[in-house]
Length: 313
Image 1 (cartoon, helix red, strand yellow):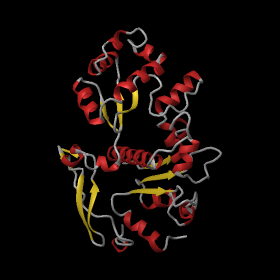
Image 2: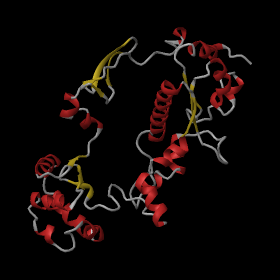
Image 3: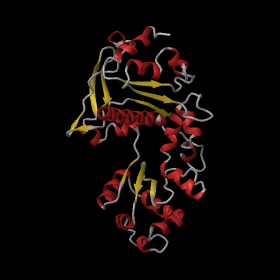
Image 4: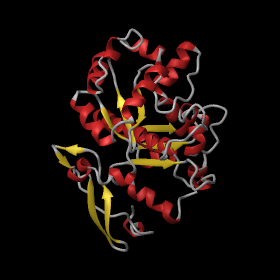
């Protein structure tokens, strides 16, 4: 069946340098029937059909699940975070498993799809060969369980949820200053010694319970209690200045209001003003990428509904 309506634009677009992204994950809390497995093939927009029109096409599908017993299921960020284990290692031990505050599974899957497409385009420039790419949302999320996955696969033991602490580095967590939380990341013994000097508690660095990181891991609760008592004596800004000056990584735990009044954010040109035809002037986050030392500008505002349909986007 030849494509009709908006789908009929696809063959026209493929007259340009061909690459095509097929999203099949669920959206808006319901299965995405328009992009369910097999739906695009019925519209004449499957890989084999488009390959006939353009043999060197790079065709990328973002699916819910890859090959296996659930490959026909749609994917949802929240459910993938739950089933894929990220919620099982996120949150505090005495609280509920917690999802990440943004749709991180969707976002990382999109980044991996973009990398795959770029790799395929590079190969095509060399060999003239196109590619059929699939990036499953579920397997994508599994891939960035990172060290926590490998720890389990090697040991067979689950560390579980640790709040903001680290399973094998101490102190590497949040503490309460007198006014707000701070994040402390002591990555080695030299940094711990410098922290102790900044806290005016140099004896902690030579205490056999805390001198080396394995000792600190073994005596985590005792050390954390001592450090918390010290950090409660000053404000977050005071501790950040003093501890950072000692060469120890530390920073504030910010609200969004704090973030967008942060001096570095305001001076980095990551925030840009964009004129929108319906909403007026908008402040938006630009790309984090610097090209030849320059921040990339936002070239277009978010489109209004159907704005580019007639242009063949």
